[in-house]
Structures are given as C-alpha cells and as structure tokens.
Amino acid sequence: MAAEWQGKSRGTVLGYKIFVFFMKHLGLRAAYFILYFVALYFCFFSWYSTKCIFYYNKHRLKKSTLKSLLNIYNSYYVFGQTIIDKVAISSGLKNKFTFEFDGLNILRDTLNAKKGGVLISAHVGNFEIAEHFLAEIDNNATISLLTTDIEYTPIKEYIESVTKKSRINLIIIKENLSHIFEINAALTRNELVCITGDRYTDDAKFYQESLLGKEAKFPAGPYLLASRLNVPVLFVYVMKETRTHYHLFARKAEFKQRDAQSLLKEYTESVTWMLNKYPLQWFNYFNFWSVKNLKK
Image 1 (cartoon, rainbow, N blue to C red):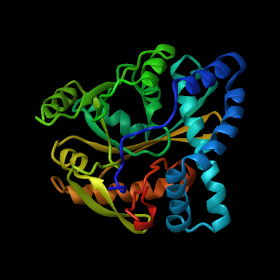
Image 2: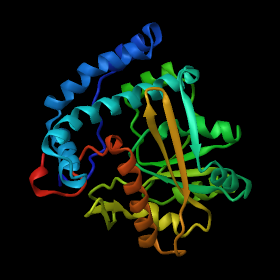
Image 3: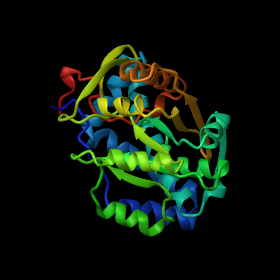
Image 4: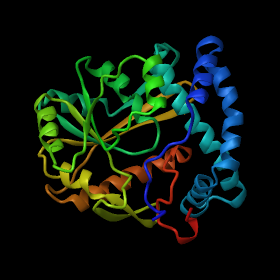
C-alpha cells in the first residue's frame, strides 16, 4: 500500500558533509543559504512527497491553491532547517540557539514523582533536540526512545562522527515483545520513554481517529502501551519559532486508564492544536490520510 509510511528517508552522505562544512566554517546562515536550492530541488524531484504536502495544505488546512503551492517549498525549507539545527546543536553550537519552555512544571513534576513517564510525540517540529531541553530541567534526565529503526546507514555513521554522543537510549521493538521489559526497566530508573504516535506500517495493528477533519490510521502499539503502564503520559513537541529559537511544549494527557482509543483522540486533538499554530512543521511526507489519488 502507498498509504503507510515506508520508513525511508532521502539524502546522501555528501549532501550532509556539504552542509556541515558550511555550517562549521561559514556559519548557520551559509548552510541555510544552500538550503534554498536544496528545497527547490525536492519540490520537483520528490514528486510523491510534494503531492502529499500539497494535499495537506489544500485539503486539510484549507489553504488556497497558490498558498498550498508556496507552502510546498516552505515546508521543505523548514524541514531542512530542523535537520541542520539538530546537527549544529549536537556538535557544540547549542549557544547559537535560544530555548523556551511551555509546561516545564509538568516535566519537573513527572521526574520528581520517580515513576518515569511516557512522552508521546509526532513528526512535527524537531523533537530530536529534546534531550538538550531536558538537560536544562535535570541534568540526570534520560530519554529512552522506542523505535523500529535498527538500520545503521552511512548517513547515521557520518552524523555520529561529527556530533556529540547522544544521551538518548534506544529501545528496539522486537517481535518477541522483549522491549516491554526494557520499557519497564527504563521507567523504574525514572527515565522518560518516548514514542512517536503518528506513523504506522502496513503489517501493524492500527486505530483510526480524525485529524484535521479526516480519518487517519495510527499505530495501535503506542496507545495500548501508554494507556496500561500506570505512569504519567505527556504529549511533547519541540517547535522551531524563528531562525535560532525553539519552543518546547509539554501537556499531560488526561484519559481513562486502559482506554487506548480515548488516549489517541486526545493525542490527535493535541497534534491539531500544534499544527494550527505551526502549519509548516508537519513532516509526515507520505499519504497519511490514505487518499486514493496520492498513490506513488
């Protein structure tokens, strides 16, 4: 099926090396300047993603045709900026950025309760820099990221060579469900277990819920798990506001225990609020709403 996320990202090691060279030797502005041309390239040569961005703007955000076309370029450009920012912050240039907290007390209360917590995020904004926010709250705070991504690509190898070692622990989802024991161990250590709740694969169980006015499929696992763990569940997003300013939002989920569907509904309402505030930072570049004419 073309509707589900395929788990593939585009780019080359050479492309990353060029950006890193300009960023380190000529500054962030130089790296952003190159991005003008890279974003334009993707508008025309990543046609499937381009169609998906247009659909999101035209039919879900209800933008005009002209505005929707312009936002294709703007979306690629902002996405590229978040990638550059992630590398910059992780390679020692954190002082070039400013950070703002919204819901700081919620995160502190969660850590102070010593039960751990589940953070459900989405592919909006730049959550991958969240660990740098948490260091401001509690230098011992640790994120364990639940992921299916075990592929060690040349791009990952290069990024790791130019950035500081991440403090995020990876918990790999396994068919034998042994990752459940790792999650429980992380919560016992008062860690924050992060799950992304907005991408499913064709072989996984899913729930359906409305997002921006249309039913979409969401992976069942994050909501089944989070609704049963008896620990605080937070929705957390890190959004880019200006060229060098980021804003972290944390909201505590209020839902009926063991009711995964109600947790999902609250999540989609949270994501909708975030997208209304930051419409260009939706980075699910696939047929999220399973629209028939958006097949590859």
